[in-house]
Image (cartoon, rainbow, N blue to C red; front, side):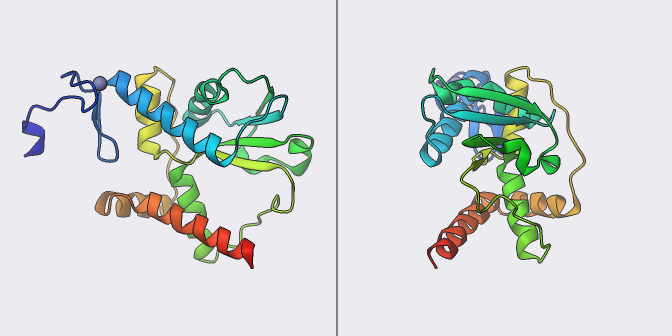
Length: 201
Ligand SMILES: [Zn+2]
């Protein structure tokens, strides 16, 4: 069995493993934190570069994800002066009035959330996409991270964790992900390709 073989952190070779998630491999706590921070920084900046003086709204829905998002935000901004406001609100209760006047809205959404949203849309759940004509960029801040990676990051950084019961669709999705690792990221790639293609029409 793989667990019986003494494993070391694949970055610094430390034997003190904190994380062994399939998607990231064996890592000590310090290297895992570094991997997560670099990945989010790259992902968010690539698609939505921050600009000096921008007004940014971050939604804090009191979840582990919003606490992780806020702790990663500083790193992503890299000292850039922006006008950040944090609003305590559930994502589903946000109205267009709430986000008026901001250039970016950061949502504490993971890869799992994005994949579930795409799946439920594919399956015919006609969810409204109310902000699509707006100039405001809606950014799923943690879309490059799986929920289990976010939970592990929260644990490594001693961020308080509060979990919610998953929806039936989410349970199915997680079962498929454990059977076919990489499925969630694959779905997201498909969803983005689909979005690009439909925008070009
Ligand atoms: Zn390490």
